[in-house]
Length: 265
Image (cartoon, rainbow, N blue to C red):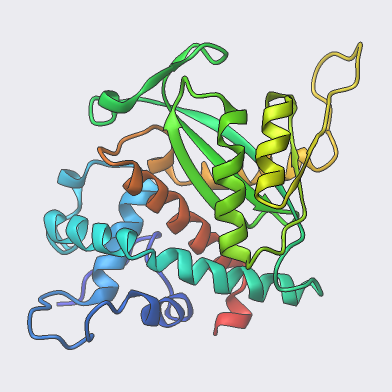
């Protein structure tokens, strides 16, 4: 009996593109009880719906099997590798260099839950207790690096680690990083310089009110909005920060696949 399809199921093109990145053991390994495609579809169902593992529909593999396999994929950075290659394909398709020379960085605070509360902090600006997700994207909005910290950590304190992760992902091609006024300060600029990046703070014009579209900064805001379509990322539902990062990269990977279907076919 064939399992019925869900809107979150990957199509053939996406699945066959991702499959080589997900094969931590041979596809026909004797210990494998469930097809990789079914496990991947179950993981995407959780990412899309934000539901608890225990509520995974019964026509998917068991929840514990999917959770354990997802953890192995996240630890091995399988989706990071796939997203890296997809990002290069996307940039080349748009007549850009494969690796970027400029990035935009920002953060958002996710409300904590009982699962993540042990590592949560209080964000005084957002009046929220939770986890900060720090994001670096290129000028097309492609995710390059993701970091998580307690929400009480300052954005500017993460500049060095974020830039170093970006340089590792791109082969040290990035020269400039755009950020909002939360990254103002001599130490933040020095930290970026140590990673080989010039930090440029895009400030809001004085004596202005309401929403204003600021150069460069809107790109990362759009990327955060794209990721928010995955309801699992609406709050911090994870016990481990590596799992939270993994779900963000998985979402970025699927978004790239959807935009590049003619190329990944």
